Length: 452
Image 1: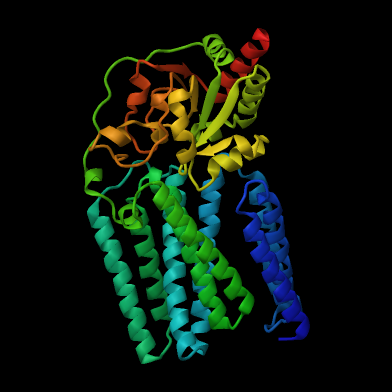
Image 2: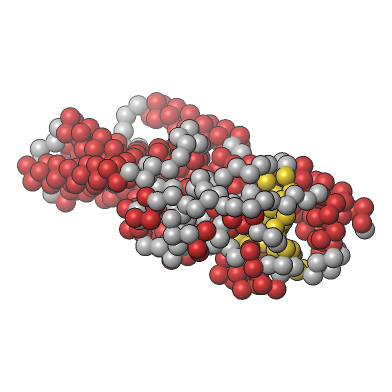
């Protein structure tokens, strides 16, 4: 490798490290994302143009151009509601690419490099299979939650078989294309089967775990190819994904093993909610909010579906003009991916100081006058605290039922992603504002402006 290539790779690695550091705060995340993109452009340009070790440069450049066009096109067109699916797709493609590169380089390896190639094929394919199922479930092409223990058992057997095959191939020291294909198929099948039974509430944890596996597979590929930059980039992704997975598991008060392997209580059904709901009109909600002192907005996936983040910002701005204290309660798994609500509200320029995480906001609910719940079903469900038969049982929730009044914005009485009723909707303190969230919030804006 030339001195120029080493300098460019070092610059890319520095951009990656600084970019990840900036991504740690919502206030600097955009700058971090830009810096990471610049680092990747420099790394890709160096690999393709400065140190070409392959023939058919024109074909390679054509493939790079096609990938760039596809990435930019999809990023520009994707809706905020589909962002988790896009993350799962890109993550799966990354893992699959790492596995294929390792399989292609495997015949030319020996010793530790050969073992790393086999490990990469397992991790990359596992991430690909799991991410594919996550994409299908998030897109709701596959409805319901599969709690079958048989799927988990078969998934475990498949990964054990893949590991056994890898050990055999590594010990024999011979490389065959058919063996590599079989190894990757078994690993991908294991990832798919282990992801299939996992419910929507745990999906953000699973996505971050699969992201970590993709990073580790990329780092292992770097060792196989002798590419230091790939080692650094993969290690960063793997380490950050692992840390995020651990943090989210702690926030959910659940072990990673429980998320993956499931819990016996999930085999039971939740108790049915009883009582009647109390509808409310937009003008009555406006009056409640106008004369409240403290208001907490709890956003959920329904806000993303309605694309109503700008209307939420208008409502909060008007309330603040009236002297009302407005905060946002953010559950760690609200939405369909880590940080989904933060990204959504940042798009509407909601102040970062108003975004309070669950541990911080929960003690404030008993002193809150009105909570405005927008599409956050499972993360506000009191059954998680009281109903041992509920799939949500044991999951920490936002304690909105402790506020003086709760106003829920929903299209209908449909159930959340976990597929269970929410007793909150039948609470005497709860009022239901039915309709599309965007239209309901627009009506609130008009009513609040009329009061002013």
